[in-house]
Length: 283
Image (cartoon, rainbow, N blue to C red; front, side, top):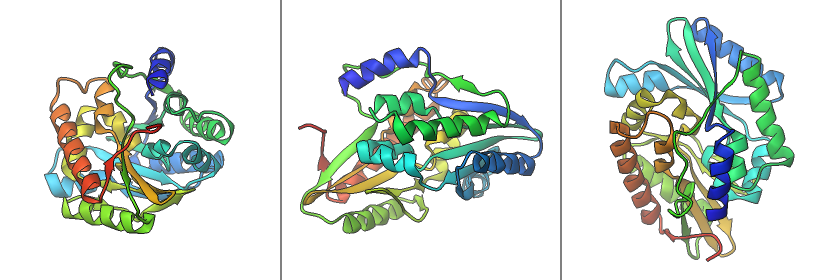
């Protein structure tokens, strides 16, 4: 992982953490354009989540329009998680739409950076990245939003919180994780099979409000991803590392950092409650 993070430092000089494009029009018109652009490059939307309305219902007014287009898993997603299950932290891909009035930002993650860090870039994974870039390109000029800083290669931080549940079945672990998420006040979408990995997508409105008011482009990682995969007699279970979001521009030094720390604590407790023991690949 240190070698991967060192590579990421170099890649981060030229690549971005998120891809964004500015689009004018009503929210409904921009959403329709985005859906058409995705279908035009062979990516199939699965559902559109009205995150903005959900957050406003829970936390009150003052949160912008925020839609999340969740894509159906395709060959690139399956190949990515088959090579490295940690790729599930952003799969299946999400395209976010946020803004107000007649001005909206549409974006997703920069797969060249993330998949390069995870050692899975190439083949069908590369084709997925190209399709995402091409879809945004149909909407306007695509800009790369680079990280403000890159993770310290010596820190040992990984993109995912990884745990191992010994002597378990993946179906049972998924049910335990979902039960713990619900008990902690997170909303759940139906889980999704991406190749050998089951992806669980929860969201907590209070966390979303703080994060996306601070950095709207963080929507490439929403809803939050948990994942589980059978690994011989055990189950590999994990979730996106919330502190990775602190490397996005404008996040450090804001209330979002405390929120991400709280999210990490809760997410870790959920993985442990599901029977997980800390796990690092290769050990």
